View 1 (cartoon, helix red, strand yellow):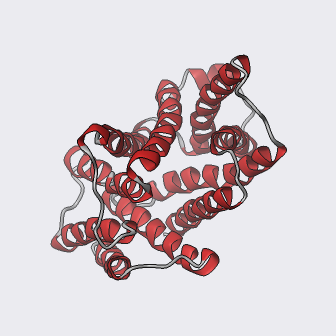
View 2 (view 1 turned 45 degrees about the vertical axis):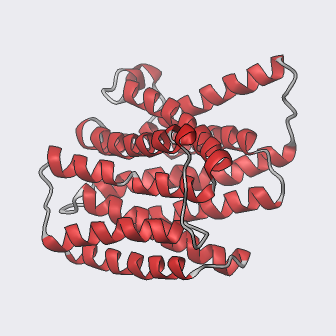
View 3 (view 1 turned 90 degrees about the vertical axis):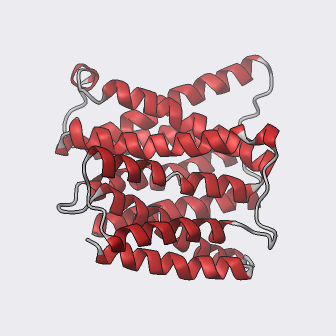
Length: 289
């Protein structure tokens, strides 16, 4: 459970850093790309073995990590579009609701337990995600022409979590967790650098030291959020459906509390109900272990 707690804390720190981006007018795209570079370097540093490109490229997880890297940065851009067109609440709900995809995958493919406590806890968790994420009393609304963006965020986020579980279980050796994570972030960084190169050619790139520093501040917790999540998925006698439920809901809970304490965010009644349900869902799912 220690790794799960560390993953939650690292992921929640990402939320805090993103809030600081808005406060200091950081160029999010530039910072995100720098973040992927830093996260990849962090994984390389943490890797206990000599870096052998032939060994890495021959691993069963290599091409999966390549695809995941592309999905990582693609989902981020889709989240940005969703936030712009539908609002932050829609993007938050789409991202966190995606936990149903790895949960269903774990239950169907790996025959994970489906006790009453867990099922009730998961249902309550989904309700908690919705209620905690919405910021208006009217809830959220999505126009038909913009429905595709939160749908793609939902699917993409679910694919990321599901794929991490799949590769962790079937291909990634115990000593390769850090280099597997580094490879994912490395390919995301490559795509990002290509984007920056295009912007440079078209004359729309304006690099800033502030954005680079912001990216460094984001990259380290981002790396550890994935590293600790993979470690948590390897914890003996803990189903991935349990890990993903607790992880996602706890991140939402901790980041919401951080928003209140650090940024003086105001919550409506539905948010408080969601927080209460989030705590209840974590307790129920934890008791089902």
